[in-house]
Image 1 (spheres, rainbow, N blue to C red):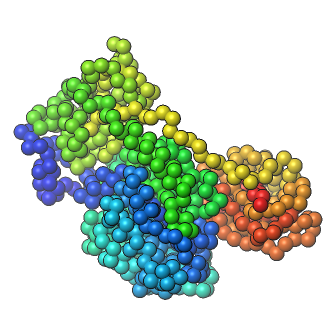
Image 2: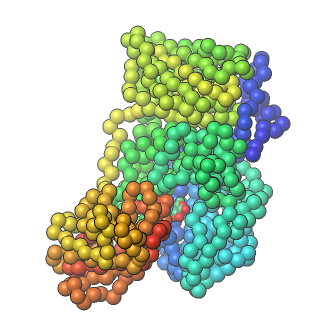
Image 3: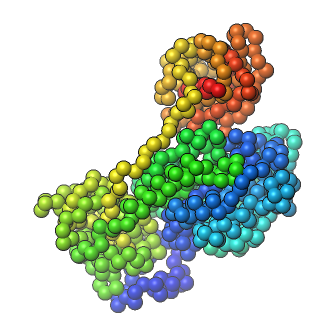
Length: 639
Ligand code: FUL
């Protein structure tokens, strides 16, 4: 929990415009200086880059040969420069993902970039990104996966020391770090030093998180620490790029564990208006279906319009927007991603080039006095703010313009150093002399909220703060017009995906209501399942055999997990066989689908060159929850 100490109070009065009356007392938990600086970033990027980029995987097993990491035209300025130019205020690099391969020449493990041919083993990818971030004037952050499927010591206290040492290296040798990112995926099977076994850990206690955080506090006092539940920044709870609204910066973590908080205690996604600590949410999402670059996803890059929606669904709801833009095998941001990012930047520039609240006459029905006038909410300065008297718990602010103006978005900001105070608000507009309620469901404000209404031409606006936990304050009221015609050319399907019209499917078991045909009906909402109302859950292995109707040149088989938001019975280990006649089968291909719970996107199994077959047999070997099998859709990509 943070309280406003003497230091923050002094800093605060220094940056306030010498008020003649006392400022409001802070309410509840307030952000640390590092969190305030982090709030100001609003939008920054992730770069997922490791051996997965070269193996076409999302989670490496830990047995990848470092020799495969060899980008052919790596250019940190192209990557970081593009991000900076497109409005991203920082970049976080996956210095180590779950496969354990370190992108810097660490002393803690031999499984690192010095064993790769890139720059003849003398490369340091972390240094490249850190230096480029400095050159382009953006922050640099590090992702260090706690789960390490390579490290032989994983699961023992020795590994936890190694992990802290890796942190120490990253936080000592690469200049200032703005965010340290600990993801929440943990435990399970892996290469683990060659034993290829399964290791289970207690994610609450094993990593000794308070000791890891001490390392960050000591070495990088200006950095914020992210994990599922904080301590400084929490996960928004999904990887789709959408925060719920309201979203409160205040939150009560159950323990310092990086794990999921117990239901009923707090909600990681929304936070809680009476939360005990300041732990705002971060909305992370990838510009492509996967976190790592895959050639087959080059046509599935989000459109500028889609990215703009994500901006509204994250920054617009009070969280930060962490967009992943994964470098490709050349070590560059792919051309399609550059187009999408540029389109987003153009849309944001068009919107934010004209604040339609500028020049308004502003009054309030509750005023604290000199230094806290309503005009402070229009002065484009986050440090100054309008404040109501101590006893006020509601207030109305009136803006009038000399002429009607067309707008569709309102942005509000509270001065977060004083805590999150506003609980409920609404906005009215006056069109042709008639008032109407324009936004009715305003709730959390915090560092920023952008709510979209229907486009209106109004000559007056009323912000009604209906409920506040302490006297309300606002450092910004601004109005914007969302641009029209933002490109929305997101390609959804691979043009090489084959029609399923003549296919026939049979299975080792099909539950009533969930027939095999659901896996090939092209409907993402229907599933094949082996959980039968009468016979119960039928455990893996379970097979689905498909007759494609004719011999086909096959490049890949796609498997879409259920899309209904439930992770039960999603297949995460599979076997695939193919056949010309349906009786003599190929050598089986086995593998893993990764990160399904957080990101249940279409999975792709690449087939060896020259594969031609009429029949496919997909066998589910393991599922992530429960003990039956489900599949939403199986597809085929032709050569
Ligand atoms: C998750 C990981 O499992 C994914 O691979 C990705 O890194 C995402 C940002 O975090 O926990």
